[in-house]
Length: 347
Image 1 (tube, one colour):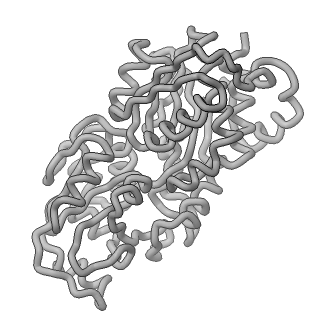
Image 2 (image 1 turned 45 degrees about the vertical axis):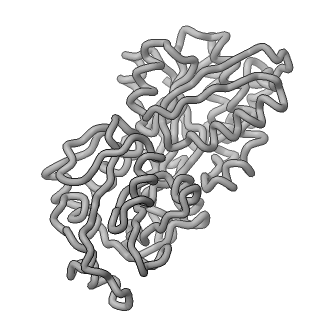
């Protein structure tokens, strides 16, 4: 296995002259169609990239947002050409499923709320408060623990309605992984995974479903990828960094967390905690990379999929930023290109 790290990113600069990577400029055949499915987290940016890619190359890319669990199942069954997952697969899982894996874009999960009289970014929720809300132990918005961190807000005596994902979800995996590390009670009673036994709340399908429910029900709270917060004009809470200070979800705080990405990668871009809980007072704690899964034996089709994502790396940063995502740092893109050349297309 190839160890992908900062040194790898530097080494690739001298080595990307031959092989597959040097030949991944898009063709203009106009007849190729690529099909992918999986995480709803990156759905908005993948669809936007695909639209522009078809204009530039004539190649159509279809992506269905069915959740990370569905994406993993479909690519394992070879139903689609590539899968999307916010849950990183371990090297053991990748070998078992005969898959390759690489990150495509970085995004952030935010805690959104529908609270009359409280504006976007005004509400502060401590780690303890978020944990107790999703455990069902805090039932009303004027609970003393919430009021403690929001002395200047007029919090209503309104019942809290928790909205969570109903299906297997990488967004859920990352959110519950974070909760397990910041809330001991959550770790003890629930834990983390693509699917968990929610102590309270209503299930909704996809990031879009959670966003829609939160928007519809006063008093609701949920977790979604930041792009869905923007699209649905939702309010997002301030959360605590790893150093304990409250911080708003902003492009700057996402980029601060993303700047630490390379320190997390191991073999095949695996990190048990993704980029969650990145260090620093300015780093958003729920920042994650979303992954692309490729079948090992589909060499020619993989080349076409790689062409699409390489085009996105070269032409899609502005699109990603406009939607609220963080483009991969150049050094990480170069490391991925090395991975394509040295691992995916090594034979």
